[in-house]
Length: 137
Image 1: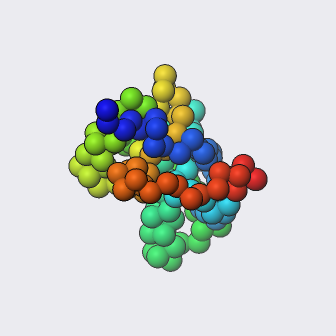
Image 2: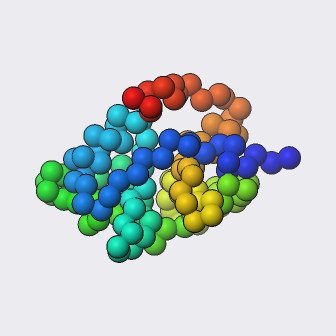
């Protein structure tokens, strides 16, 4: 039986608002050791994603991360995964879209994030050495 997204995804979902600065987002992402944050904007675009690459691109363009907001750098045209997708389906979606993270939705609510790292870890058979207690602090 193929591995499912729900078995590979990180359930440590960092959720931020659209007005968080990129500096705040980077600090939270670093503290939780995640490469993406789910951006919830109930009054605007709904659910989006801000990745480490989005922050890197902004800083590389000379923008001030303490002044730039998540909203200005969030991807809102998001491809979502379902918990019951196979990792193969998730990998295909990532490769087709050219991205490294998928927000996993269950009943329209974010329940996890699956990354290329998660897929590689599962397919390689190497257990995750990440200590989840770090994410809880």
